[in-house]
Amino acid sequence: MIEDFQSLEELYKRVYPILRMKVKEFQSLDYNNIKEEDLWKILSETKWKKSKNLTLYDITADIFDCRIEQIMNNK
Image (cartoon, rainbow, N blue to C red; front, side, top):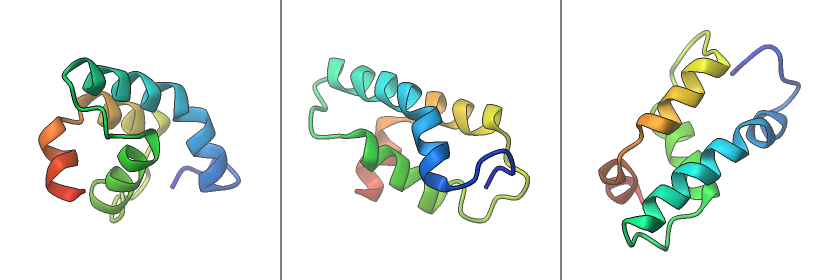
């Protein structure tokens, strides 16, 4: 995905705090069954899979912009 990272695991660790914030937002709306891994997997498989030249900004923005409908439709 992003050239600055050696692996997807390293990238995941870097954006984990943002994933965590988004999951907490969903939990505040009573969607307690969504985990950080779920959000990462869904975005990776749908939004980012065919993307080229993604930046950390793009990934972060996509996490913040993710809606509960995207998660529920792909879970």
